[in-house]
Image (cartoon, rainbow, N blue to C red; front, side):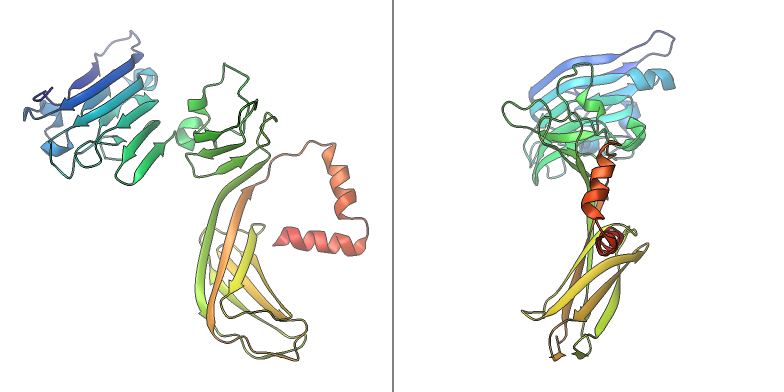
Amino acid sequence: MERSAAPLFDVQSAAGDAPFTGVQSVLIEDCSQADLGTPHYLRQYSYSNVPIVALNCSAGPRQAETCHLDGVTMIGASRIEGTVKPGPAIRVFRGWVNDATILNSALTGPSAVVGPDDRVVGQWLAQTGDGLLAVGPSSDRLGAVASNDASFADPSRRDSMRGHVLTVATDGDTAARMAIGADGAIRYGDGHATEFDTVLRRQVSNSTNWDPPRLAQGEWANCSLFVSSAEPGDIATAAHAMLGVVRATLDARVVRSGVVAVLLHNVGEPILDVGGGVVRVAVAKFAWPKQKPEVWPRLLLLCMPNVRARVLFLGAVAR
């Protein structure tokens, strides 16, 4: 279609008590919206910001929750051929978009599903000028953080409500080996357990210039860096650009919210003079999975066979 109106597919629900669940399995292919006509309710946007598809389930909060576009595929659609700002593929005023796949030209084709305020909404995958863009439901919509469920065996579970935008498995697996959540968390499993065993919520880092003082053997020096969202108990590591092969240790730990201390300890050099350079810290924020009760005694035996081991174990956890 060379001169279709905008939007090409406009879904609106009338007021009333009858539930409207939306539309499933929509395919739009090879469409060019060169018709300058625009519905009145979309005239608040520039013409290039009028979507290919619009969804407005305005019959009340309950209907807005149940009204979906489920399974939208868009291939080769464009708003104005040749424009470098093609606007959104789908604009949602009220309702939800599940499982949309948008494969349009990076130059002329819209690639996003957005709300009235241009914030991304729904769950979808799009090809853009920067590669693939995957969006999933937020924790607010899920009612909690993304699910730790890794199993594929339960058909009653909807992957779209787990909060994962990418799930990876290998042939023969019964569960996922890795999942990337819409919140940025990465979950790891073994491909068979029904729950992920490790959850990396995110990594944060910072750097600064540091010229440590000269240190005699046994002496130490420290500096502090601000690292956003770091909390005591997070795993912290450090590196100094000028610290070569010397008998010294460089340690990092989160001492309070947002502050990481770096400690340089001369353990074997007569005199240690590192020199000025960049010191970098990285903080890994893990969400520790709940261990089964019978696992804890074995952990205690492995980590605390004597007083010395107990001190080392507690020190490692405190970093």
